[in-house]
Image (cartoon, rainbow, N blue to C red; front, top):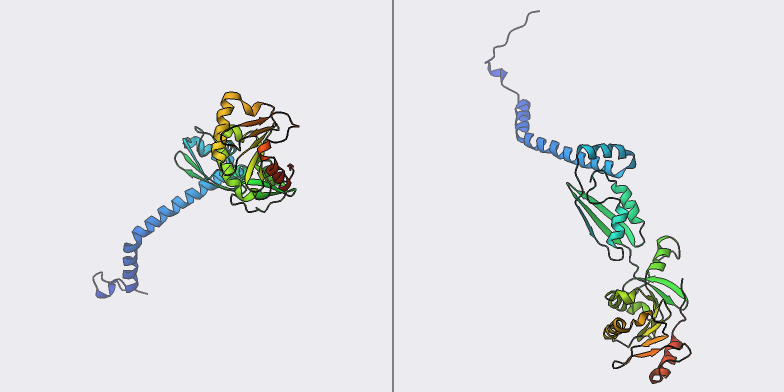
Length: 297
């Protein structure tokens, strides 16, 4: 069989419509294809870094990668923590400034942080080359409210927070959060606790804040002393107490009551058999009738 040799310049040698369309498509979309490949490489490398940083089975590979790419951690940015201290968070992270940033398991660090008492969950991001971003989402408990012999976790508004009793994190929260006692203590606790937060020397000595007659507070200290605060005048009363503390170290003395209800004088009771000062005896009897006996979970 013989073949006819086709002439190169014949009209029927022109490219077909399909070939022309393909060449036009390739010319137009070639830059987009290049960008798509680059994007795929970036996404793939980020996924690989995440897997190597998160899964324990890749720890050996992570160590080798950290040696090949010696990027050191220089900054740890933490936000969202109010009930959890930053020192506690840094200890749970398991990495310090100066350590290789790639030789670090985000997955394991999140597990450790999520086990902290007031942490609900954590988001950790590695911002190369030298920054770790830690976002803490905390649980809502703000205080423990004792009312009629029952203990409930409450949020800052005074609403009851669902809990599991003394199990798990709730059990730790019951032990660590401030204790407020009595009718109305739940809805007024946040203001008092915020005030006391400015005076850690007093706050750290308090075992319970007792709401008296739903109008004022008593602060029960760990050594048994009761500080009697005036109604709606907590800040000036505590400021006066701090002045007396600096002069006389009242909070470390074996006193029964420190009465701050009168703005122009301080009344101190040292004998446990002595009843409160005569000027407010009748009112205190009424107050104590409305108040629970203090118990502890």
